[in-house]
Length: 295
Image (cartoon, rainbow, N blue to C red; front, side, top):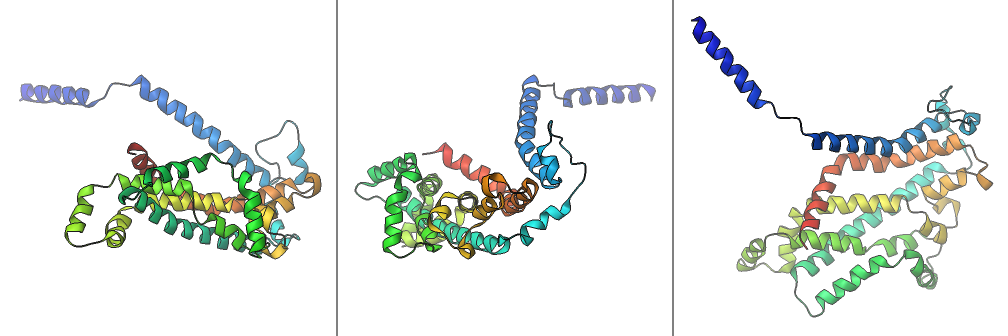
């Protein structure tokens, strides 16, 4: 009996020894680098939140301290009590951002499907021209866009920001890459059943494009929510401005505003984007990975 127990114990130890994986130095280095990178990325956010809770005079202390000596939670109330209509600007930004995001989901998905699945003369050349537009800074085209919006009587109108943002070359590229890697057999089977391109797009391609659509929505939402240049050019009335303009106004003339209040406003402004990213980050990784593997 003792011999059997000794044999079983020896086999158990041998099994545990085999189940233990050897320490991989490469994994340790990778995790270390990723941890350091994550800390570096989080440091500005931590500093922003810390500054938002400081008394005004502590924002200018040298050397700076990471933690405030006196936590001022009332800094988060100050933007709503200031002369800047913070709530109205928040609503304006949300309306413009949602409109642009929904518009790009429609136009970019349709254009991406056309470039990926339809055959028509000049398709590849048009796609190259589309990609070439990514290398043109938006500031280069702002003058003709401004003249066009002036002729349409859309100056100081949110439509002057929404209309140019309804299409995105990057969005078309992302959706085209995603649709292109879908199995051709799905569309061949739909064609045998008598489905045209519209039905194939609505019933086959679009339901499978959830990760790409989610990624495009998040990227577009983030870019439009943080946009400052276009609203600065086209919006002049207080009640029509967006949140980035309001935060710039909080800084005051020559930066004379309260930096703690400004950081509190910035902290509140990034909450919608942060929540949206945390909810859908796995879709971003999946879509960018799959669309980048095949072209």
